[in-house]
Amino acid sequence: MQQTGGCDSGGKSIDVTFDNAAKTPLVVASDKTLVGEGTKGVLNGKGIIITGSNVIVQNIHITNLNPHLVWGGDGITVRGEGNVAPKGVWIDHVKVSSVGRQMVVINFSGATGVTISNSDFDGNTKFSASCDGHHYWGFLILGKKTELSLVGNYIHHTSGRSPKIGGHDGEISVVHAANNFFFENSGHAFDVATGGYVLAEGNYFASRLSVVTAS
Image (cartoon, rainbow, N blue to C red; front, top):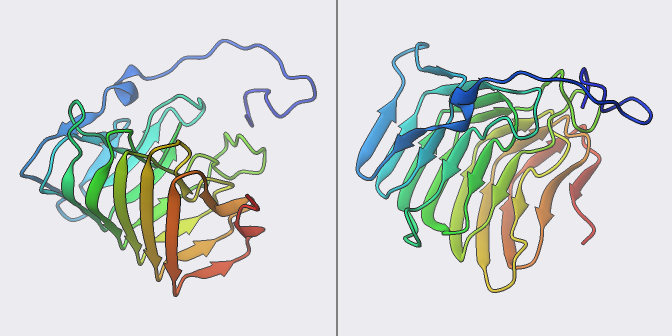
C-alpha cells in the first residue's frame, strides 16, 4: 500500500500500530434507528454491524478505520445472527471514508429488502492498495439470498469492488443499481461473479476505466 512500502519494487517489512476499536463495530440490532443530529453524527474510528431486521441508519459519517491496513475495519456490515438473514434495512444519507477494508459488506447469511440511498462513498486515501490514491475495497455483496437496491449514491475515487456481487456457488445476490454517480474510479465498478445478478438503470460513469469486469 502507499505510504507503507507496498508500492515499492520488492516491498518491505514494517511495524504497524492500529486502533482496535475499528475491529469491534457498534452493533445495531432489530427494530432500531440510528440517526445523526446535524453534522454531529460522526463515528470516528468505529464502524457498524447490523445484525437484525427493520433497521434505519441515517445521516452519519463513518471514518478513520485504520485506513493504512487492508484488514483495518469495515464501515457498514450487514450480517444476521446465526443463519438468520436480516430483512428491511435502509441506509440513507450516510458517508463512508478512510476505511481499511470494505465500505459496505453483506455477509454470508445474506439479507433482503436492503436499500442504500443518497449516500457518499469516498475512496480518497493516502494508503492505496492500487497505488493511485484510490481505495480498492468498496462493496462486497454476498449471501445465500441477498437483495439490495443502490439508489442515488455518489461512489468515487475507488479502484475496484464498486460493487462486487456474488462469488460463491449455491448463493444468489441480486442488486438493482439506479441513478448512481460513479466518478474517478480507476479500476472497475461492477464486478459480478458466480451467483451475482445486476439490473443497472440510469447510472452515470465519469472518469473511469471499466464499468464492469470482463468476467
